Image 1 (cartoon, one colour):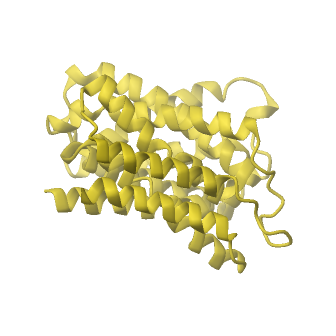
Image 2 (cartoon, one colour; image 1 turned 90 degrees about the vertical axis):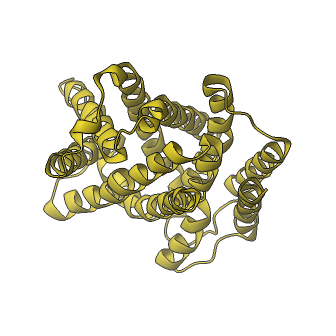
Image 3 (cartoon, helix red, strand yellow; image 1 turned 180 degrees about the vertical axis):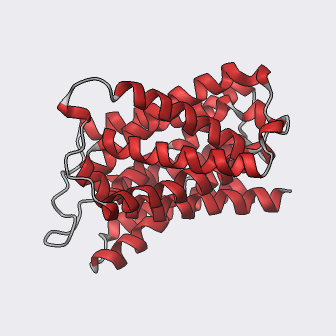
Length: 295
């Protein structure tokens, strides 16, 4: 079981890394709200259909609906914050700051669920935190694609910390339901259906801030939905499985290695090498994660 949960968490990291790099440009084109609205609406339909075909709704208990309400609202806030960070700082910086999900979830799991952190876990989490800070403060090389992103500033860090805290709360809120046997795909479906309903209501507000900033074309819509399927349908469900079958802090650490994977993916896409400080920070985060998992 531990092997499967480890593989699931690592698969979640890989999915988020790929999805984040693919999401950068359509998010820039559409704006945060329009991008999220298209993604969660399309992915909620996909997951609803999947759960219906596979008869996964029978695993859902009505007694867990308060947890689902908390989880859905905090997840939506986390998604909006992440997309804002993606537009402000690019995929590498966004995934790196969201790697803080690991120590934040570990602390929340201790306070909320009573999961105990060992001294080794604390040391590993501290190394992850140090690696994130080193990498997120690394400046991009100039002259390449994506170099128009602003450097890290307090607003970017503040939005990132709010978003990662909301994501951590979202996953922890449904851990009791997952441990009782609820399918991770059903939980993901509930998340996205609830988020789609909320954004649909907000979309009725007559404001240019929530309107698409570019004309919607079939190609742009496809490029928006694809990273959502990779991230929300596949990666999020994989992490939920890992949370259900292992310690929340350990699962969060393994699920937060996307920054390490984003660096080579983005470098290959943009054909430019990352700063050595970014690579060093990512490696420190990996070492911290390895300490937690191995020991």
